[in-house]
Length: 160
Image (cartoon, rainbow, N blue to C red; front, side, top):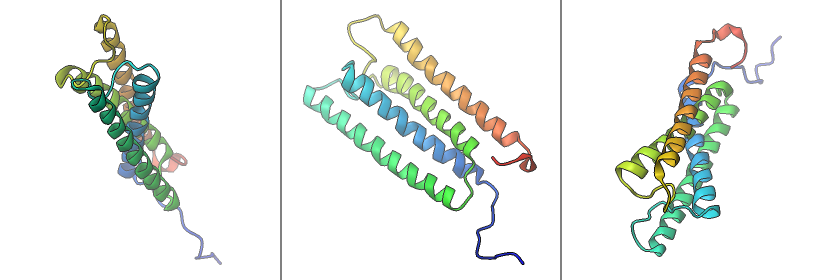
């Protein structure tokens, strides 16, 4: 006789597993950017086109947003695990996609299009821009590869 009180394994929720990873990846990369480049190195603030007080406020708002996204992402992650529909591989792929997407968006949109801030001031920017955007592109490609690999695995080939 089978104990019906035990939860039965379910198939992975592909979309949610990937999206929760993306959300956490965005939050972690935003935190790394804010902590390392805004606070420790003091190379820039989120918004550098105003007074130091506004720049500091913009960093605080970015930090608050990344923490809210991180906490929400981990609650969603925990819910998917509890319901046994989380695909760890897809979540890792989504994490890399989110981290890389944040990096590329920040480098292209925030730095170049909107000119909210630059990576660093008083230096030749091209090497910094290339490294910043290329590192994000590498993370994006790695994430796309992990997601593609996880999605192409047959359901009967083991846990995802």
